[in-house]
Image 1 (cartoon, rainbow, N blue to C red):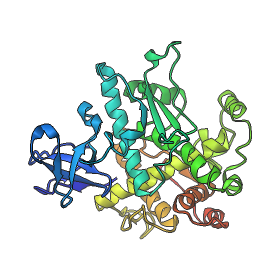
Image 2: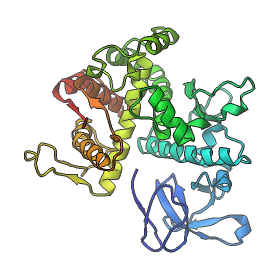
Image 3: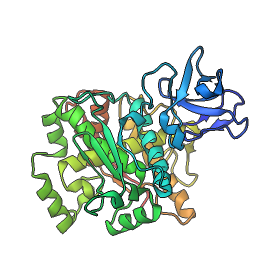
Image 4: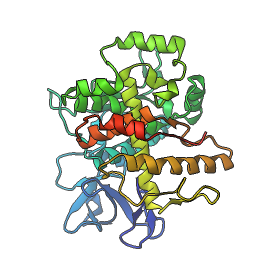
Length: 374
């Protein structure tokens, strides 16, 4: 994620802004150029056509979901699509006539649009269709109260369909679940990054002919998934799990190890991009020269070797954790990056960028490894 600038007045803008606070121009995100643009009405306001100041000679209209203030993305004015590149993947959305549902949906869509920003920046496939011509990647946002049998909606992934419970948008309920499940971190964007990891295991690993390569790194996914989860919830993670896994849940099954590691890779690249946008430079005065220095001078979405990501992330996450503690908040990144975990993150990098995995990930894992501030 990065910062943006109003093309009319130069005001600093954020991804979720829909109006410039300084000049009041309407704002719209244009996914084709990955930029937030100031807009000016074109012709009759009833037509809903806008001219983008960031693009010459093109006209746009807002995604249909802008009506509910859940989306600030635009589509070209002559596009047959009513929905933007992110919203057209929705299969089920909440009943917007219920105020609580609408408030939850707005939080969920912001997190989902952040996800799509990252996936687009990484040039990951999004437009694959199923046999019926529908988007292969789809989303259901469901309220537990709407279930016919009264059961609780479970967040998860099933063959490209990602389900997210509206309850997760309730900060108090999500914190309760985080504590009950002994999780150090639980957020809406974290859910999306994890669940989409399962989808890309299908697309990049299973369908991409990389099963054997992935098994050598994350383990044999043919182990019974249901039984593995039952064992995990009954017994918890094995002793010393932090030596090889990014989270306790990653120990439950190779699919979950992949999805958890995938999510953390997205955490890292997206946060590093924002750090770069702010020109952040970490240089602890009491540390040995160069020991915990970090400066994001590169585009984290374009690096060829993953080592620069990890080497920059470790000092930065230490600084972020320390700043959070001064405010009495929990660590923003309470995770240990052991050498095997670094190797797995390197593998995710290579899966995404199409590099050949010829033992480089395991070599990098032996060479690199560190711990976040704890």
